Image (tube, rainbow, N blue to C red; front, side, top):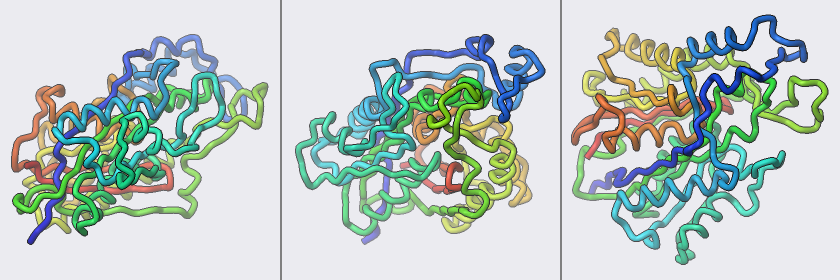
Length: 357
């Protein structure tokens, strides 16, 4: 009897606070050595938009933490799947920094975000196991891979996978990269089915590169040398990440697709981590080049322009928006093959091939 892993419901939480690029005009952006940039902010922001595609991003309200955003997305996914939340076997919550309260410099991961989410969902079943997953930006996609293992092995019948983050609270205001980051959450319910042969998760691939790549994303002090050197913020070597992603993500996507036995011509949509518009476009172009094919029209939906980079939340949020018809002209029909892929701190990369049911 063949067991298939199906996504039966999705949900997302897109915070209501909008921060446009213009809100950064008064920031004092500094170089890594603390010296000011030579150009004015309007020129810096113009170049930033040209590269990343980001026009605005969303921030959580001061009263909401990452676990609160996760609960909102989870409730939407549970409602979409039309299941009793007490029948969930696992809750997997991917994040990077835990709950960072407004005005705080410390991440709160005790108890785990997954335990907080289970509590706020009022799930009383002790056999519903809740745990956190730290895998950088690819965390939510990795959660799908873990859920697939539970469901295929018979260890579970229903798994809730959430990606949530409030990156706006761990950014250095003097670092121009702070304009990239955003807050949000995305979730899905996965279930095991025995009557959907050929649908659901078809294959996956994942890798960790922990040589010199391990520090491409890291925690470091503010570029403002007058700030407390013991307080750290999210930092990255952008050019190195860009080159790493272009050299490795297309290969992971190909490995997953080849393992599935599905032809490249069947791939309808690619849901790629929303980190940088130019980088994502280059990744997809290199992926299709591996099959000596041009990039099909409208194969890659993008929400980075309005939502920014919310790390683990970008792929599930994008998937939810498309599946619910909120990303015209993009849509997904029964039988369509889609790819989910991500890259991030670790450095980790992964990809999942999925046929919609």
